Length: 473
Ligand SMILES: Cc1cc2nc3c(=O)[nH]c(=O)nc-3n(C[C@H](O)[C@H](O)[C@H](O)COP(=O)(O)OP(=O)(O)OC[C@H]3O[C@@H](n4cnc5c(N)ncnc54)[C@H](O)[C@@H]3O)c2cc1C
Image (cartoon, rainbow, N blue to C red; front, top):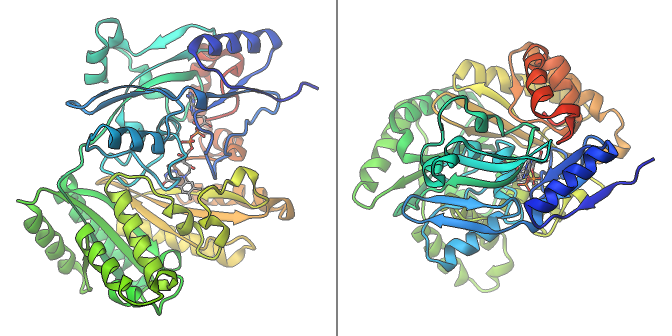
């Protein structure tokens, strides 16, 4: 029995040594950037004999072109590192953030095809070029780096077959450098908030379909949360100002210049009202500042529910402004107080997190079919989805993201049930955008067997014996 080994390389040279060590000892390599892939297997390998390569020590921001917004990083650079760097240098750019907060890596999230809040929310799509180590120990670089590294970043298609595009959710390369596009912060950020009832969900999806086809350029992110996720105590004053007793809660982030702001907000409100009658609130930094001041005048208010909720609104604004935030932990499950500790780590906790995140065409009938399906699963099962977040990914697609936090050791049936819901979803034409380690065999064998027949051919050529990230995707 071989023992689990964890290596923390500081250079490409040390990674190449690790690859040779793996070849010689007939083991595979599991690599991660920061290792906070919570809900999808965290930093654990599928192959329990694998050598673990913890790349978090390779955490240099190699360069940032402030004119073109091109950032070149090593694997271990976290959201928090990037935020500190941008602030220190007065670069007014968004961090490609997500709900996992400041400890999660930029590279790992892009490689997992994660999505976030700020304008380039599909993080894999912001990858411009890469460099990394292949399973034979050789160095791979994007096509145009042979001509000029800057050109490679500026024209990410390169010339000829585009191998870089196969780097996300894949397992043939240990990425050591990545260039990504950052987006400049716009002058104004407003969040449109409204609540609506279950019966209005279809109308809302139709409205969003129209809004996205007309105004995608001005809209940063659109999310729909179920009430349980955002509002623990419906009686607080803040809740009465911004929320109602409706089931769903919609946020639309609008980016604009002060010269265009009013007309964009006016048009958005007009489009919303064409589809439904609802109270529309606008949140921005000025309003949050005002509310914070107002509530601070009330004695003893710091510990009260109102103040707490204003802080949450401020965190939402931080995310929209491209800063990091841990507020996602609270949204995970409002009943779990331990999640409020910002050093909390699922890897060290007896309860485990698993996501279920099916994607869906941005079509009302399909979205309603999906939510009905999920509700049916909830009725029949001992495992329940408590919180739902719809994310509008683009003009065509939405994702329904649902976490489950359970003590798996005491719930032996979990994985059986989880696999079953994947199969049931497939039968109705839905599939998650991203998979937990435990579900990789299901993905390959049950969900996409034909496609994975082709993937296998590529894998055999680029990653013989599955040396890198064995069993992942
Ligand atoms: C409360 C909460 C909220 C969350 N919100 C979001 C969210 O909004 N959006 C989202 O996308 N996720 C979210 N997550 C899930 C997850 O925690 C994040 O996606 C996180 O960014 C992934 O961890 P990481 O960046 O440290 O990646 P890592 O764990 O470092 O990497 C993830 C995987 O990518 C591959 N990989 C990483 N680095 C390399 C490399 N250098 N070379 C080759 N392969 C590599 C490996 O397969 C690795 O397992 C959330 C989790 C929690 C708990």
